[in-house]
Image 1 (cartoon, one colour):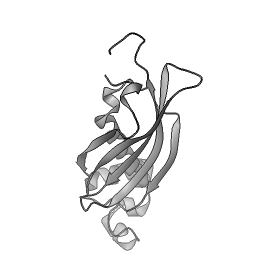
Image 2 (image 1 turned 180 degrees about the vertical axis):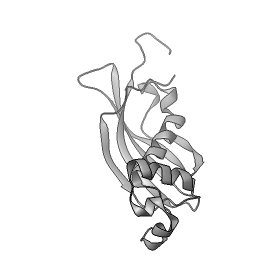
Image 3 (image 1 turned 135 degrees about the vertical axis):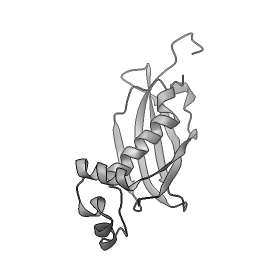
Length: 151
């Protein structure tokens, strides 16, 4: 189990590759972002996105899953106080394979809850061409190791 002390600045976690399927794009869009370019290949091609494109919110949800799989599920995480910024840099098209990294930018102990550390991170998602498709700067609250513990 990783704790706050395991997150010094510069620590990096790799994302496992995920291929984005057309049916997943349409299913997400139908429920959460039913804009035409997210619902059909034809509308996507007619848009500035160039094809059936995942919603930015879908890309963010994929990144969240990548974060969980890369470090959060192995961490004494207490959640997040928020996202500082979320940027969608390029369209994510059906068939794209996404990967990337998450990097610790800064870590400090909480002033109000000293048993919790606040870790500032940057998640970057790239496609199979090495193009950055999304960047997220956010904080994660992570429990400190218990006093006198080697946990």
